[in-house]
Length: 287
Ligand SMILES: *[C@@H]1O[C@H](CO)[C@@H](O)[C@H](O)[C@H]1NC(C)=O
Ligand SMILES: *[C@@H]1O[C@H](CO)[C@@H](O)[C@H](O)[C@H]1NC(C)=O
Ligand SMILES: [Ca+2]
Image 1 (cartoon, helix red, strand yellow):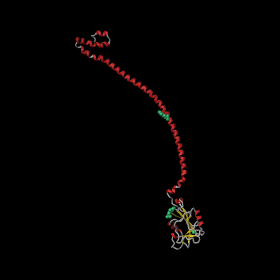
Image 2 (tube, helix red, strand yellow):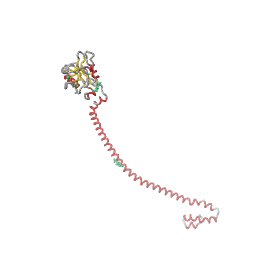
Image 3 (cartoon, helix red, strand yellow):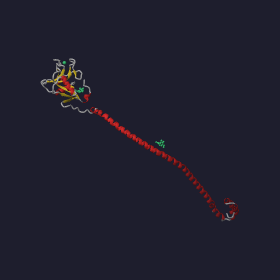
């Protein structure tokens, strides 16, 4: 470098860099020990610039990236922030609106609850009497007959101790919520028979008559008699006999299923009342 004075004087540092190539032949011709010395500083001479350039480029790149990053950040951040705040406000109003709605619904719910309770109370009040009716149907309560009345097949039977004529007997039975006994089956007949005391001529009115049409026997419910448990030769209308009674004497040959007689309705006799109970009470009097 020191040997090439022309290049130093005429040009700047840049031209010197170029001259380095030209000066090489001179150096080779001149002295041997010089080239190795030159060779060492050569890379060191061009290195700092390259390094600086690289450094600057890197710095630039870093700065550029930083700037881009910041600007992009700034671009998204302020915009995002603005949207976020407006959205937040929206949400806040939304929340207050929702709270108001919830309160409204809560009030409506309370109102409906009140109405429901009132309706249930009304329903219970109206259903109460209905509940009583189906209960005996669902679980038939045991029928309890009044004192001196005897239970058979859902009916209670009363054997009078006093005597009346047939119409008064029927009236008494009706006053007790019943009627003169209607006897349809041998079991019923036998049950009643077993309640009756034996005597000289113990006779008991029951609910049959032919007072409307002679020899057309009808029960007190208006249904015609079918069969019956007449004594042999009865009914005979012997002395205008239009009412039926059961006779139980001391004669043990007499039996339940052959114990009916016809007699004048004006006779005073004891009598048998029947009163249907429980489920049977609601159904029509059997035919
Ligand atoms: C709640 O906000 C959303 C949008 O964020 C909107 O569509 C909606 O209508 C709002 N609801 C109420 C009750 O304000
Ligand atoms: C019991 O009563 C019913 C009607 O209430 C009747 O149909 C039935 O024959 C009676 N049973 C007896 C054994 O009398
Ligand atoms: Ca008669």
